[in-house]
Structures are given as C-alpha cells and as structure tokens.
Image (cartoon, rainbow, N blue to C red; front, top):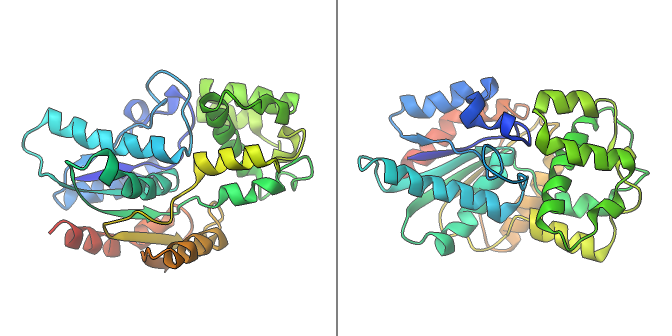
Length: 287
C-alpha cells in the first residue's frame, strides 16, 4: 500500500480531498501508483472534512493522520498487504517526513517500509524571527500570505495558552479567522494583494513564540529507521531549495542519510520529474 499525503489544497472542510477529489495537478501522479498495482490510501488531514481547525503543518498531527489511514484501510479490507510506504508533496512532503519519524513509536504493529518526501517545507521556524511589519511586500512572496495564515490559524487553535492575536493586526486576525471557514478559492480572493507584513503587528522574535513554532512545525533530524527519498525541484519557488539544502545538511549531520534528489522542475513538476526514481525506491522498499 502507498499512502498519498496531499499538498496544500486549503484550510477548510470545503477543500478536503474526500469532498473535492484529488487536485487536478497531481491526480495523474496518484493514478500512476494505482496503475503500478498498489492500493492507495489518500486521507484528508485532521480538521479538513472533520470537526475543528486544521493544524496546518503540525508535524506530529499530520503524521498521525497518515498512520491512522493505514489502520482504517485494513479495517475496510483484509485483502491489503501489511507492507506500506508514504509518498507526499509539499504539505504532504512534511507529512511523509514526520510519519517516518513517528511511526515506530505510534504504530509499531504496522509494517512501515519507507517514505518519499517531495518539496518539503522545512526550517520555517528558523525564518520566524524575520517575521514582522517590515517583511517584504506582496509580490513573489504573495503565496506565503496564505500558507502563513493557515499555519497561524492552526497554532492559535492548538496553543491557546499563547496570545497569538497579540501578534496580529486587525487584517491578520480577519484572515486567520476566515481561513478555516472558506474554500481556498474564496480565501485567495480575500487575501489577494496582502502581505505577511500587513498581518503582523510586531516581531515574532519572541523566545516563547519561536519555541512554540519549533515544536509545531519542526521536522526532527533523528529517529528514522527506514529509507527516505527526499526530492527537491531546482526551479521550486514555493519551497526554495536553500531551505531544503539546510534540512538535508542537518539530517546528515545527525546521522540520518536520505536519498536526496534534485530534479530540473518546479514545485508540482518535481513529483513527475522524480516519478520513475520514486517508483524504483518504493518497489525496493516494499520487497
């Protein structure tokens, strides 16, 4: 079995893949795994299509979503093999890494074999001290407003002991309130032209906030027992390659040695550029 961890499609129940279907940009990729003869589980993340606020990019929570989908699939069918891997892009790439790290402790009874993590958003917490009213204006950073809003909404809901609203402008609070209640298409209209700078009323360089973000977003560098293939698009502007290079360096320094591939593609294109290599990796991992 292959568990497909989907990329960012929104922050609300309206955007849940169980409701909308697989995103058109990656549907052919998911179909490719089916055509190779694998069963594919493609779960929503917690808070999408289910009660509550989606904890966007919360490492441990998205990992549990992936792992629990394997348990659920086996409850539905006795025909599934026990061996499984996780494959993910973007938000799903982070989910794949976090699954690989958590699975031994969370589900030791499952026969997990490896992860393919592509376009992995990482080291976001290391950029947090740069966040504040002086952040660069919208433009090439325009998409970051949506991703930051989703992450702040999840952090605010999961860490109610923090006064997250104190760091937000009225516009920031409006966007964070709206994100979990609107489809991605509608929210994109609301956030259009607004920058991260307009959302923040003061610096995020507070040790309490930084520690909270590290706990919420951080990808561990140790604790992996099965193979990892990590893919980065050289032309990826959504997850810039310097952040991934730092992740790979940190993993290697900690003794975790992923099979790291850089492909000549953008963010979504990276899954197709690395498709053959990922298929070979998965076939080997499931032997």
